[in-house]
Image (tube, rainbow, N blue to C red; front, side, top):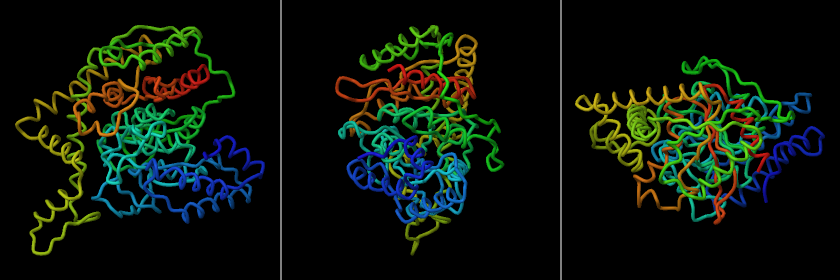
Length: 475
């Protein structure tokens, strides 16, 4: 059982062969059948879904053909919606209902998208496997012994399993692109500032981006065209718009300059992943693209800079969770205010969140600020300059997404350092604020999906999506 494609659902709606209410029920039935084994959704309210579907059907009956009517959308559990709790998959926010809605969610709802439920994620989006969730891990639909990736693993698995057409995730260091690659779907991280962060529960504010999972570049493009744009509620939103691409025209890549950064093809890259990335490059070259060797010399420092800077921002952002205003409150009977703070945070936060908060507090302390935080900021600037120089030679960069095709459940406990190092190919895009996309290109001999990553200059989403479409068409 799987939901028909968005194109099929929309055609059926426009031809009045079905209704949004019927599509909603089909999606709910699919979730009921598949979610127990995957744990992709953490909250689905059938009554609210049916009410939303009826509202869309009524609008259509009155002559309003909403552009995303027929799209079933999952929402990561860090984006606020007024009708559902937002918990960030954490015990500390259990049951919290926000009084406002994320701009990205509100814009898609206004365009006719049907919100179907909340998707699982690593607690406060800190992780790469969705194992750091208070709701338990999300499993990979292609192999239940493997994780779906993270932190947006629930969104990736939900789309891959056909429980929704698309899903929103967030990408702070690869949290859309990596799970998309693991689950065999498309994952788009836009330029920082293209999509409003208002209503997104912050992990690292200068890194976080609202991204999209979908099966096709067409759907991802439509979603981005409605999310992008200025927002007075978010001062970091740059006011840049994005126009939906006309995919009815042939996506030519002739003359496209594709850079192959040598730092992304070194030791530690799984041979099967390398083979599929190389095959993709060769196919693009045969279609008229020009392959250009490039160097991004400061890539090797990216992971260290990323974990220092994001931990520092997280330690500040998460200081608000103290049990006073909302969420979990440790029993304060007979205890001091300090005891309540300590008890709330100790019992409410999971291990990985505590680890990163402690790291962030350490690197921001007076004695170590310059040695760690200040140096990491300088590295971030050098990485940004590396990319700026690359764009003078190439239009896009083609790289692996992850050193391996997947991760078995339990790696987080056996080798947490290896888990951090697996972010090496994705974190630099967030350090530089540039867009990136993961495109499925095949599978390993064991059936695990493999994706390739395309990186582009700021606001080059059109080039990334059209190139991604060409790659998928050439498979």
